[in-house]
Length: 493
Image (cartoon, rainbow, N blue to C red):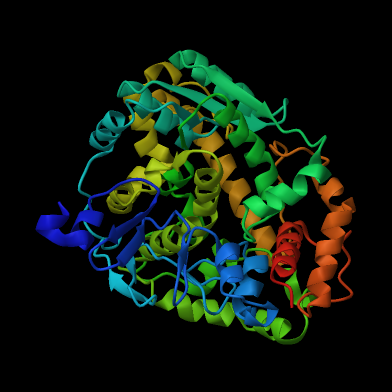
């Protein structure tokens, strides 16, 4: 294929979550690229390509003064750096539309990868995509996430219908409703279901290895349970794990802050930032010096950045931004960690083909989750009437939809009030009572000698406010501040 269309054209035919490096022994040139959704996180500097941000920083001899205050602040306040930048000025992520060329002179240059955006026409239908996917999974041991929600049930229904041999899995606490619901769905489809209960007995002892595994990015609070979940899969011989986080784009959840105005020509970017990018802000006194200055101007910087992602309507712009920036970073980092430590990891709904399909669906298909209802009712009717964690079915039958209207509006009202509480009161109302994480993990992290030491490292480096109290540090920032301290210790200086 490369002989006829060249590497950029051939690269556009691939699917999955991946980093591929193609070496030319004749010229001494290597070219690297990632998947078209930018889910896999790989990095490059002016002279190297790496799967590890910290390894690349250490190889280049970077020190603390090589950090970029703007992106360090973003990593803590937003939970990640949502574009191709990193916390280092001289290191970037390989973007989904780039090919990074490492020449024989040891220098990197950038070539375009012509994958296009999500606004281009979809090239496949939902069932066609999964039928093709099923052929690729014949020799893999597959484990599919199955929660109490609609998205994972839609994915599992399609895998089941296309004849894929797979187990289902979930992690959480024993009394989680998601565990009860997913067990019922797996039983209805006849698939083996594995439940991993979050265990924190060795939490403090596990922290150093887990901090290494997340590579100086993200929050240890997000990763601890996931690491146990993935290790269980690895022990069972799983070679590929599937998630369904991007199935949310088949619904109207990401647009809901614009409800009911889904037909405006342009999105309100300020509202998008306030409700979707950073709904809760406690960072005013977290930073000092140039980092405090960067924090004060973060929202303005982001509004300028978002201008470049405007598309034809408000909902299309929201899809483009949330998928291409926030979702690719937060969800992508989870898939990258799994790939680097355990096995293949993939979200089919994040693939560019299915994102285009979701992007071009009539808006009415997103409402009441009608598109997913039709898929589950057609491909796995036995489990369509099992209630989700939101209290509604996934059935497309008119009677079921009518009965679900009350539950649907209760869920949407709760989501709206939660967003308004975040925006107006700066706190989250209606907190989830079904948290899959162990209820004592937060206290254990705050009391951990290592966590306290690493946060002190951030203070000593002139980044975090010396008056910051570990016991009252907002949960949204706590895990990221611990990770920052680990990164600083790895750098030194």
